[in-house]
Length: 189
Image 1 (cartoon, rainbow, N blue to C red):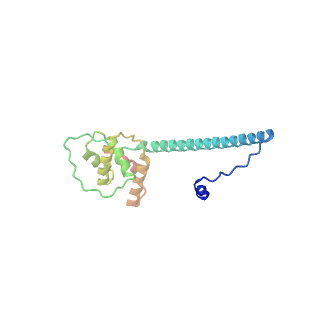
Image 2: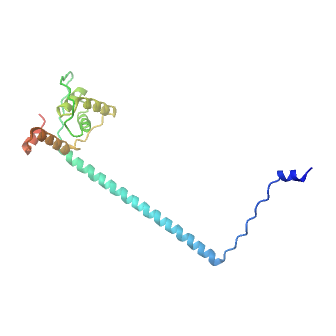
Image 3: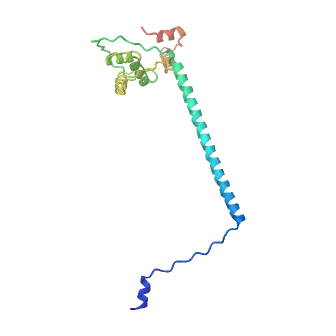
């Protein structure tokens, strides 16, 4: 057998590593101190980041609570009509094509939640009388009903809605409404 062929099938020799220089006790102590300092610095940065994140979350939570409280206070004055339940009540009205209130979808949910046992037609009639588009009322009533008919806290969004109604009335007539006229708009017959 030829030796040149055997050389093809043998693994090449592994390169040898240079031996590591041994550290002196002083070098070992310096290395350990540097490692400990780096670890302490990393831990301090992580704690700062955690504290900053907690502070940011607390601030956001406080702002959210303040906003919710402001909305609740604003809606305290809302008067959504609650109709008596009539068994065979039919309401034939023309279709209202465009809503005239702020946040009409939210208003449908508020009205439906305030009248949880009223018939669908009655709730839609209330919505239309308040200036919500007919098809918006139908769609949002269905979504409210599908969501399990949640009850509504009526203290949300009241001032905002009535202010928008007063502003739209002012745009229509060109006159600024007084407080008595606004109260008349807000009253429910």
